[in-house]
Length: 117
Image 1: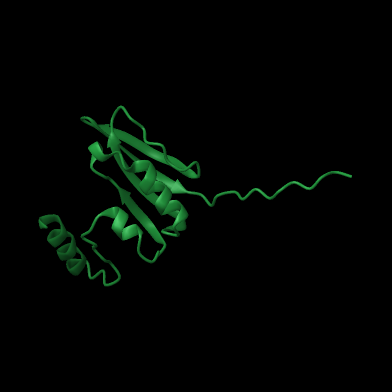
Image 2 (image 1 turned 135 degrees about the horizontal axis):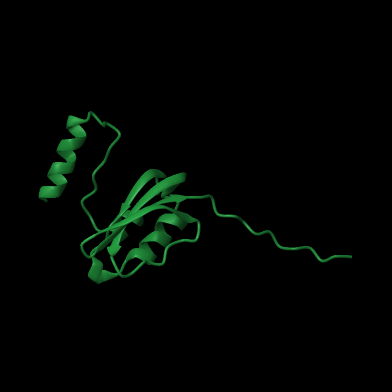
């Protein structure tokens, strides 16, 4: 609750009228109507190991803008399985935490090959 109040206060101070803070579980938020975002923070509780399922919901559910930036925090020794079209831009470590910034690339669609005649 304290973090939610602080984030909402920061939005007011920054006059970020389009900003929104949602205080609910990520799965619940992602079950709602999608809105593409340019910047996403993916930092679930480490013990729940939600990186891969949440990343897939973000990618497939229409939550990411074409060139979205995704900041991911995970255990230092474990790189989470993320969509292949998330390109690593920067990474680092602080204690037992790995932090990384990815840029989303539009997935390449594969069209079926036609038989050669």
